[in-house]
Image (cartoon, rainbow, N blue to C red; front, side, top):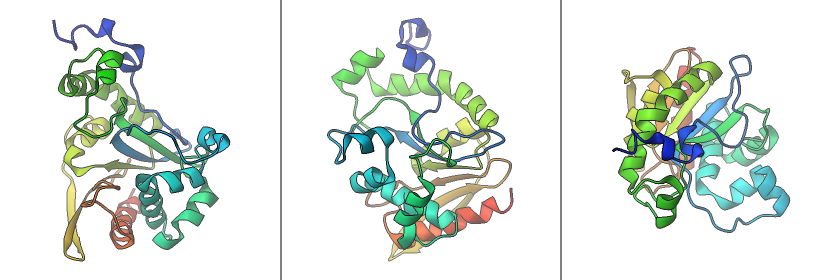
Length: 236
């Protein structure tokens, strides 16, 4: 019997998995910008006060995580701001901190893992899956359809997927199928960067990772990617 066929034995957080995370998930009448990664990273002690941790403040995010710092810079560029002004803009807008400000941070897969290849003993115990492949197959086969319905109901004003090797997964959850995307390649100091785009009712972008050495890891790269994404939003 496969784990997909025996979903009744799985923990409820997997059986009922949908998009969740900090910030403002929005609605069709109050649309949010969604930033969607692949999975949550395992995080130990956070450098912040208890109040900052509980509130997920912009200051906490900026101090602790390269991913969030670069996310702020990318969003600032998308919104027509300078990447150098990203912290001030994020603090003004309370990005991912406020539940009403119109910015939502989420992930495709719900289990925290230190790397994309990691599947710890703790993960096995928490999920019931013997390996990460079986777990990912379950999420794709069972949960993606409900996640797609959630997106169609909420209608984000922009969906950004982070991680171009997962472009097909992002496409599946947003559109319910694989769709044709525009590929844009550009160079920053001799390094190629790639962005996938699609305009429409829910503008869609997939970018390179925000905290890897080969990803969008400079103000110039983040600024160029943001400008490309801003171009499709004017067409929705």
